[in-house]
Amino acid sequence: MGLERKPNVITFPRLPPKTGSNRSTRGPRAERHPNQMGRAWADICEQAVCVVAITPVLRAIAPMAADELDSLVFQMAVESVGALSIGFTEKAAAIAARSRGILLFDVRVDGDAAVQRIAAIRYPSDRTGVLALDIRGVGIRHCIVGGTFSALTAPLENWTGMPLSMQAKISVDDHATLFLGALREAGHLPISQPDS
Image 1 (cartoon, rainbow, N blue to C red):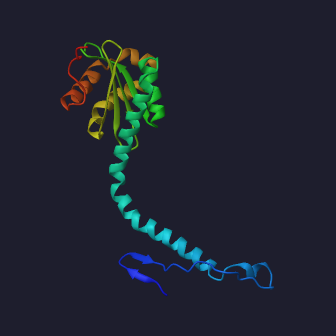
Image 2: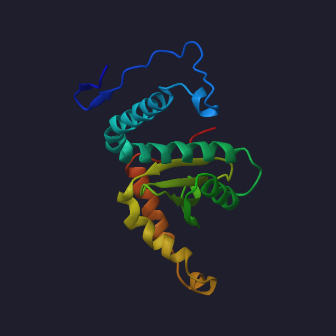
Image 3: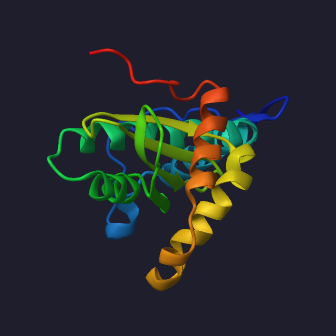
């Protein structure tokens, strides 16, 4: 009865089940099974071995899992807020709050045939959820994109952080159109409004 060693795994032998009574007249301490402490220690060590064996796997998939988790949480938030009878700005804020993201901007897009507003939500994995309100103001298209679009979202984010008096003097129409065009070119949003 000893420890068996395998590569990167330690297996503890199982102790036989407790049988009979171990009582004596020496007091409450004598009522404990003599191997009770050894059994508890073996169980703790087995759990620790499992954690140590799994940790490298978790470290390897953590970056991928964070991206996928952000995408999944964003998708779920969009679906849960979609049916609410509130405006686009409120929906964008609610989606950001429910998905633990940061609302970067929510701007109007002038002169586009399919989209009237666009909003972006940043996530810890450096991914950005994009919401686009269709021209009729009824449907919201959405996608999640990587950090490659951050140069296009930065001017819109900066404009949103300005005081209203400054926003009134500066137009971001070109930046919004450029961002929308890049999303379409990458295949994330449709070029025109689908027929209904």
